[in-house]
Image (cartoon, rainbow, N blue to C red; front, side):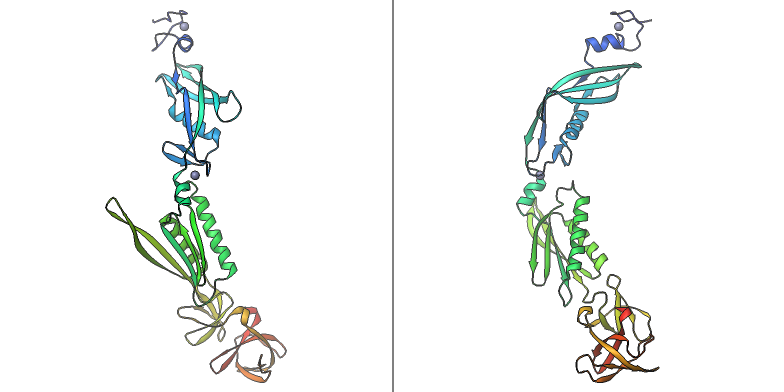
Length: 335
Ligand SMILES: [Zn+2]
Ligand SMILES: [Zn+2]
């Protein structure tokens, strides 16, 4: 049986017992000087070529665990890092703990930590106005409402938040135009994703186009435009679809309720007759099975309207819309 030449204890693979080994030999190595790279603009650290959102402590721990080398016989159980001076730069004690041939051992070294500034790709792109995609938000024949803009802003924040470590996940420009808003994004895929989410939440169609921006390494580099056109109608608007008067119930899915029979209609080619906010109120004068008489909201004459499929009694407040020659009564509960 082999014995430790120092203390005489029996040994296995190593030529010394673990205790004597740790006292006389190195069980791990680490650079004396560690240089972390941090972006002065966003505070991200560059680790193994990737920019990451980490605290200084986590960045240092990540760096050291990747760069410490240990002898093959050591099974590392933990690495502890303790600052020996105040602040982020200066000396740190690195303690490696592990098992060596079944015995718990540990060893310590001091490293000198420095932080170097380097502007990350995202920050230099962002500052330079870099973009790959434009998302144009428009509404068919009307202005975009504040409510819709709020939803768009929330979608953008949500997507960018999820892609924090994507170097191209940023907005480089927002341009408000008469016809809508343009958002410029650093990443083409983010632009596409956001345009889809907007159309999913608010309804509407997306058209995609691209333009050659530049050539790089013999390849054409494109810029993409995703134009989202929100529907002309919004929830609560009165539309005409296929000759029937309907109230929009779901803007996103393009659904409405037809006032003549009270059934649900899928909007294919609707024409907006009256916007929710422009609708005029009136009062029911009389009604029978077929006809309702109401006061015309402008002339105040009694006019006949088509009978909607709801219960009405004289004196009920309703909305009145005109389409061609006809007058329609819109029950208030549908708006
Ligand atoms: Zn020994
Ligand atoms: Zn940065």
